[in-house]
Length: 107
Image 1 (cartoon, rainbow, N blue to C red):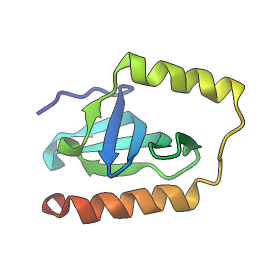
Image 2: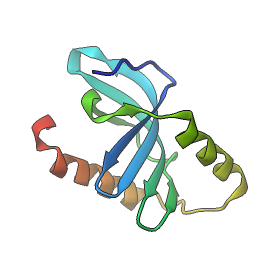
Image 3: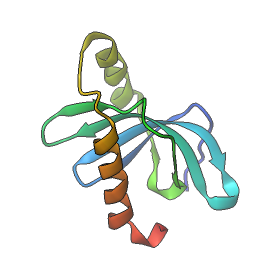
């Protein structure tokens, strides 16, 4: 089991997508993380979706792993220089649905 701390950047992989988010709070009693979504990366199309305006998530802690600096730093620089997809509603909902379907043992 990983040890997480507030403000830490974490990732959650499901199918061909990776969600990066910031830990807001560790909920030990539920073995869950309260995470503020940042980016959803679609591997097949190299698409970066800005989900910072999406709803915060509370998901099982075991689904997350700490994000490496080498993963996250390029994303921060991309936020500054690129205009990329900002229609966050459907992609984030779709990702959460897929997580629930692919990891039923946690829900």
